Length: 573
Image 1: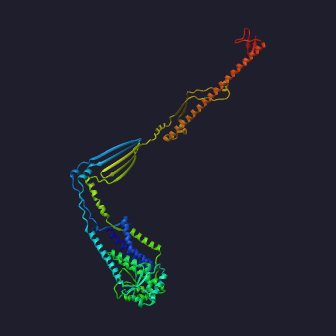
Image 2: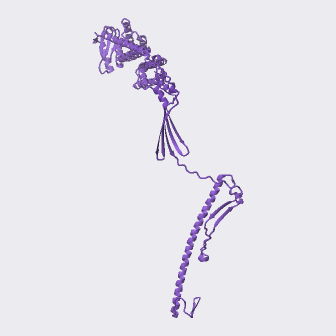
């Protein structure tokens, strides 16, 4: 029912749109008109199937299927009352699992409402049995019966035509055969069609794709020019494969008999085909006057006999627009021929794409949403109508990073939490409050400091170390007033000045250490120098004693002998 109703909507919209377009643009070429009408007749079959298979709605959504045509009526669900369960206190089953991996701690919690499970198990929803609607089956049965009758009529018409043409003969008379062979050579056919004649026909027809059947009157009473135009017209039908298209169109109209606009599309397709075959025949003979006379003559024959039916392509029929065709042939009002294959593809794809995108289909999707109502009755009976949801949470509690995933599924809640410690840097202690204005700032530096050093002076040119107990730097109120701390209420300036004083103290301590090390190196050098001087003095004294003993022949060890006197290098004996 969805497919049939969607086909009815699409075929109505498409055929009506093509009719409006061809009526609004009368100068549209015959090839374009024919392509549009074929798409209007056969296109809804494709668009309906695509929408039903893909399930993708158009931009305007979908049309709801009438309630009487649904396969099932809406079911009503009324759960039984269970006061003992509904009034009971909620019982929550909880299970907690913790796992630690290094610094990570994973906690899994599962909660389940036992009351909802008990309500679902003890008091299930009692939906009323779905009663199928009889109308879909009735309508489907009527459609199948009508389609079978219509197709049967086509089959009966084809059987009657075959029986009518049973005694036909091959045409061998000239000039009919001569003109037919000339047309076959101009058309460059790979295989020559069969040319036959029958006394039961009232109009020439094209059978299948390899036969042209003429009435006996056409062979005997028409002029050679009229016969040539008639043969050219039927040859054009074979080249265009119009007999096959006529059969397909007739079958579609018969199967979907409930769509009256298909009859309009079929008549338009046959009309355009006749116009194009007339134009081809006029081009072959050089003029359309002889073909127009042939049409007028054949029209009188058709009035005397029964109709041929929709399964064959006749040159002149009772419903054929003979007057318009004769007028076009006499005045040569021709509007072009066939469409290029690329143009056919563009017209077909563009038209069908617009139909799929813009024209909505028919669906009974609302029944599916109503059928899901019993699931909600269970939630209302249990008192825990919690929708399915997944919640993600990330937060920091001051010491740990926590990530949590919470899944709500009916009466169950599953929660997984992962926490990890965060190593936060220790903030520096707050600075001391600034001293009030007028007080003094005292900086004490303890240690040893060296005095001024010169490469000459007392004690072999070096001064010793000066040991100081402490060095005090006092900044009285005048120093503060002099611009050291102009804004004593600003904590940042106070901290900056304190840090600057610390840096000065550190640099002074480093310079004192450097002076101490340098003085130590100078002291060691001076000690070394004095030691060398003493050695030189001893060596000089020893050399002088040896000299005097050699001169005077006096030698002593230790103290000088009795009676000897030494005074500033002069020895008196």
